[in-house]
Length: 157
Image (cartoon, rainbow, N blue to C red; front, side, top):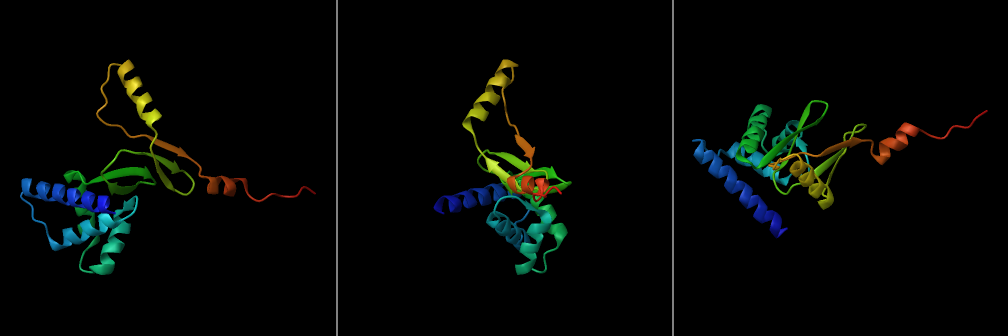
């Protein structure tokens, strides 16, 4: 938990520095949205974050949340993902990880595998590239959706 607090403080400092560089102020509304965002677990849409913020700050509008999320991305404290159905999901910037996405229900699993990272570096080097960033997203059906797809066993008459 202490590590999370330190991470939150670093993110807040990044945001403050970005605002100062761009002549912007940290408003009460942005602060409320930031607190809700860093408190969110995993990936969140602007609509989901808006619902969380609105519960405590009914004066904050959906457009304000959307603009704040874009600002958080510009500041390097958030990352936008376009995984499914045209819905943009946001997550905290931080350590690198990859994603498994269920094409049935949209479930998202984050994972890390050193061997995958090593192989990507090898492939890049073989082609004369030096990687600066990447996104690794695997799509498939989760176990729950696989069970639904196969359906209940039917007796043959």
